[in-house]
Amino acid sequence: MLQQELLSRTSLETQKLDLMTEVSELKLKLVGMEKEQKEQEEKQRKAESVLNVISELQEQMCRLQLDIHRQIQERLLLARDHPEELVAGDHEAKPQPCSQDCAPWEGSPELLQELKHLKIKVEELENERNQYEWELKATKAEVAQLQEQVALKDAEI
Image (cartoon, rainbow, N blue to C red; front, side, top):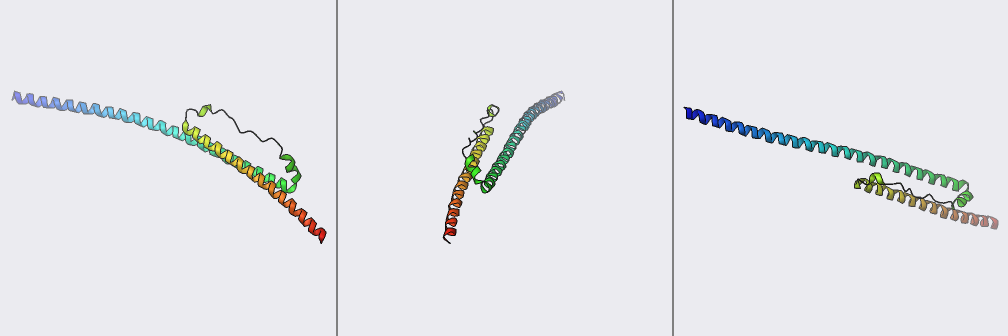
């Protein structure tokens, strides 16, 4: 009987140690999962921050596009109403591209890439604006030539 009691006690002690080991492993897993959750939350915050910056940059690009479009429309109206003023204004110095310090972006290659992409887009829009201006000049020259031809035909008639 004593031997049976001893075996039972040993068995219970073994079960107790097994359970304590399992509890320790579960606690370690829990700590690991909490750490992983904190890392995921930090990544989420960073991603939201990046998205906010990208959104702000996109809004700036939209404002720039609208401003460029507005300037083109103003020039078209000016050219239509006062073509001599536009020709005189063509010799003005063009604004230099913005050379802001990009130090705040150095830590994030994704943001730098997005910023470079947006700068390229601005340059493309500037080129498009320049092309519209060139087409406007060509159209004005063609209109002037056609007006001369009309005046000659009127004189003939």
